[in-house]
Amino acid sequence: MTTEIPLDRPRTHTITLTATPKGAATCRRIARRQLTTWRLDSTHTESFHSALLIVAELAANAISHGRVSGRGFELHLSLTTTVRRGTTLRIEISDPRGDRLPVLPTVHTPNAQSGRGLTLIDALCDRWGTIPRHPNAKTVWAELDLTDPDAT
Image (cartoon, rainbow, N blue to C red; front, side):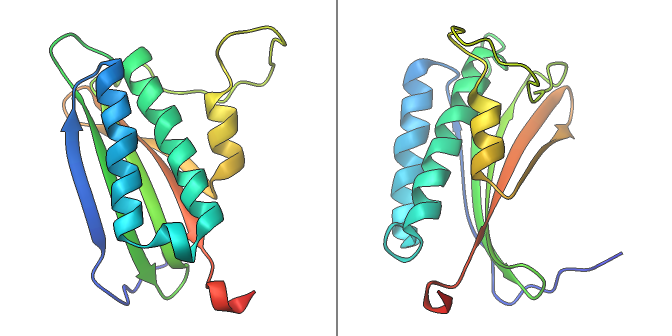
């Protein structure tokens, strides 16, 4: 088992939002503001825009497929630096539908109005997955490894 050794204190931001289209829009704005506060918009431009698309897709999935009346969803962003991976941005969206796990589609219908979100997430991030959350909820997460802008 490999243990990650943190090089700095992780920077995190967590907020609970309503499971509505307005909540998803608020989620996108909060993510943009937090990532800008962490200066990813100027230091890691491509990852910044990828992260915003990932947040948008995960929030849309949370309000479409993970919604339970009267319960919201949660956005959690973290930025950590470790010896093994360097700096990683982790995006998590938690919703109350642990019984509905996301599945990456293997076949795409050309004229379908939905079903491409996870394919987009899979293409944009370095890793993604789900973890169960007590009592009957789930967290869908995606990670982006941030390369040193001076290394290129």
